[in-house]
Image (tube, rainbow, N blue to C red):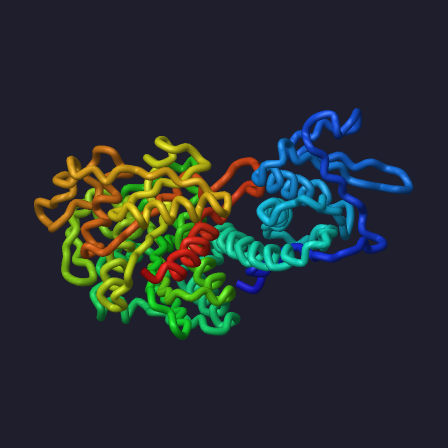
Length: 471
């Protein structure tokens, strides 16, 4: 693997400094609101960037109507435009700038210039520092928190973007363990195929059985002293998905290196939660497997026994994500007795049809849990739409040969969620389907083409609120 010029994981983001005065050598940035304030030089449209040459070189960056989300767009656009133009830029914040606006500007700047390219030419961009000039010392705390959120998103992007000739289940597990070892209070345990077989992880073993790269279960644990609530996070870790014997069409299969985006978000979130020392116990599980085609692949018509004994009647080997999640959900619930469970997965194409490419699907058995996740997402710039868990379709999941059917047809996103609900043992549970927003084809706001890191920030913000709510 060493012969591949893989970028470092995690990626290094630019520095954001908060200071009370300007620094020589850093080019000046002027924030321009929409309207006549910009004059003839600039319209003030959010994200419009112009570099004005001359002895007093400066950047004009539009912030639109001043809503916080426009500041995120502005920060991202500046980072992209200045990436190869200047080593440092500085912006003098207006006196009435709010902490929310600073947070959004910082988030956009940190993530808008993100790059992941496997190349012999691995030179970083020129821009290394954004300096925020302000007399409000409180903005320093805002920037520190946002940096942790941005690093979680960037790490989730790194893991999903890594090509699958490098990223097999073993690599993902070893990388997660290395990253956990860098954060005090976060520990990692990696379970191999022998352990999975001994414990009866039939779903993970079935999905991973067709690959020369055996599956793994990644287990991250964060147990801060005094924490009264325990959150279980479970992320789909399919490091490449051919569809198995129900093989996918060739068009688009190259994107299946990102089919572990849910697992990447969970790994990144657990790392950020520990780094921020949030007062909540977290267990994060990522069942990692490669869904391949070979003589040992699992078949349509098979009946698979999951951890805990429940059986699944397989109808489509391309519905593999729910197979591995089922094992991990039951194991996590029975082994750790959490207060609530959230799983994250690029699970169904149906959610892309229903919600498009910028909104995640949210299913939940508990209204409070659903509201808290949606609010957490909104607070960090990730949109979620609650989808119905319709009991009218529950009978479709009931099996004939096995206890449950894996892919019974009907409304695909809903029946997939109803399948997973069978393995949640009545606990408050939310399922986040990120098949749409996990990848992007073009830039928008802080998002760049490729893996987006979607859901990582939401999980961190939700864990923060969940740990603070001790009722």
